[in-house]
Length: 82
Image 1 (cartoon, rainbow, N blue to C red):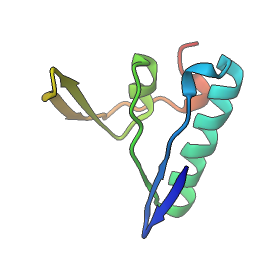
Image 2 (cartoon, rainbow, N blue to C red):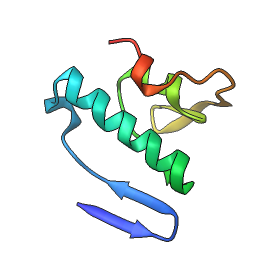
Image 3 (cartoon, rainbow, N blue to C red):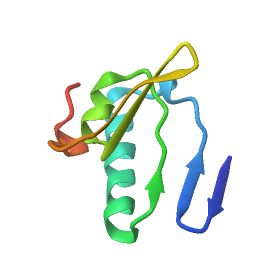
Image 4 (tube, rainbow, N blue to C red):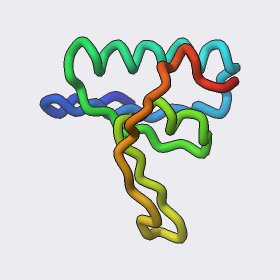
């Protein structure tokens, strides 16, 4: 499923089925789309390494926001821990 709403992109996929190489390639592409077009992306994941590439991180626990912060030391997707 892919939905375009102004400058917000939303997609849904079974990311858990991807091998690490393919997942990294997709994250690099998403990063490039964000950089080139200024598109806002919301990534929901259980993978803690991905938070290191995000501009903003919102952690949810038991249905409530438990922590929210701006990521001042972002890591490029290509350098994420594998």
